[in-house]
Image (cartoon, rainbow, N blue to C red; front, side, top):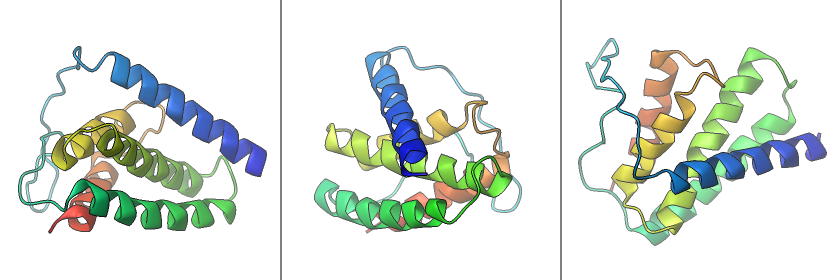
Length: 139
């Protein structure tokens, strides 16, 4: 299980490196509205966010909780895949912040990454994760 998790983490880091390399060539994602509040899933969030050091600490705590959840799940199940996507999202955001990006841009980059077909997440699930991140990292 740990070996599998390490392999997935390595894959996530390789994906992150690839996205960082092609940062200037970002795909235009059509802004699609989700139900409920009408918040656009693919737009850069606005508002006041915590300082990078605080954001990194909060993300560290959240990532540790996600890792513990993953350990208790069966790989290949929809729940595992969703939690894995959340792990990749939070980890990507943390790495972007450490690399010097602003919190809002890091959130947007993470959302773009998990929107790939690899995770097959619904727009509602992506919107939920986006909202969780915004709430976690707001002042």
